[in-house]
Amino acid sequence: MMQIVRTVAELRCWSRALHAAGGNTLGLVPTMGALHAGHASLIRAARASCTHVAVSLFVNPTQFGPHEDYARYPRAFDADCALAESEGADVLFAPAVEELYPNGPGSTFVEVPALSDRLDGQSRPGHFRGVATVVAKLLIAAEPDRAHFGQKDAAQVAVLRRMAADLLLATEIVVCPIIRDADGLALSSRNAYLTAAQRGQALALSRAIRDVESLVAQGERRAPMLIASAQIVFAAEPDVRIDFIALVDAATLEPVSTAVPGTLFAVAAWVGATRLIDNTILR
Ligand code: AMP
Image 1 (cartoon, rainbow, N blue to C red):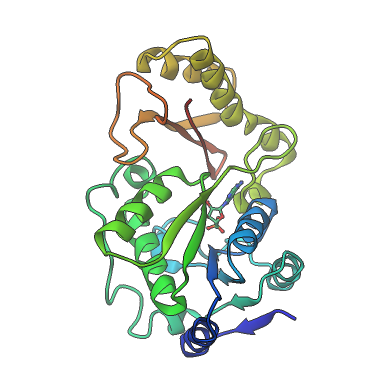
Image 2: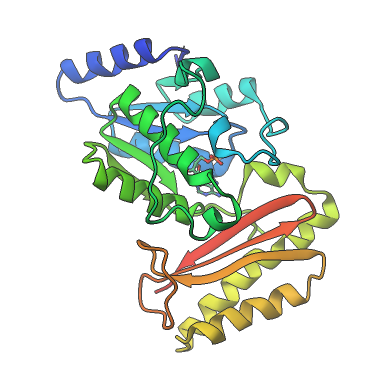
């Protein structure tokens, strides 16, 4: 039976008890809910490498800009409980905003200034400050041995890895591959916003990623050529508005002029009012 936990005190107590029992490890999977197969893959990865798994479900207000979709972000508590339980989570941590922000959102922040203005951070000021803050809180509350994140949010991965290193956190950051629909679209809770027509247009993102991967497989390494190939894909979808197309170092998020194995190619684009992202780590 999966346990639903609402307070930090209960979560910490549970984590400390399982560690005190000896031989146990805890994997944490932080999410904002509206769980899909991408989240399920993280829970399964945690299950495979840890004896116990906690899934957190928290739509974090501090990572949304004032004109973003915090109020209308999809919320599906009962379905999320069912999915988390069926994937083998032991605990679902679903705190109220006041529980994670006892003195109100904005009282204390964790900042990673070296990275937080790059990629998504450029078009979403304050976003990565909110992400770093809430993930730091979750790691402090749960004291997990490992925390699992999706490669889908590549810049977030870079920010959290840097934060974990700089704050000397004991938790290992584990990154899991992007889960896609059969047609290539990267799964996202925000895909629920798309109309049928927009769902088709949204395929420009994964198509751009695939084209760049095949160009690299053919030997192309030059940033302008790789970026241009993605621009051509987007040009065929005039209703999709590019936010960024970037070839960057996966750890520093700094632009590079030549792709090497491990370089991150990332795109973000608006499909109507919905901002979608996709990326690949080049071989
Ligand atoms: P979210 O609920 O959107 O904040 O995502 C929670 C976690 O799931 C993050 O670490 C995401 O990177 C990860 N995630 C979201 N979509 C996918 C996907 N399609 N494949 C793999 N991981 C994902």
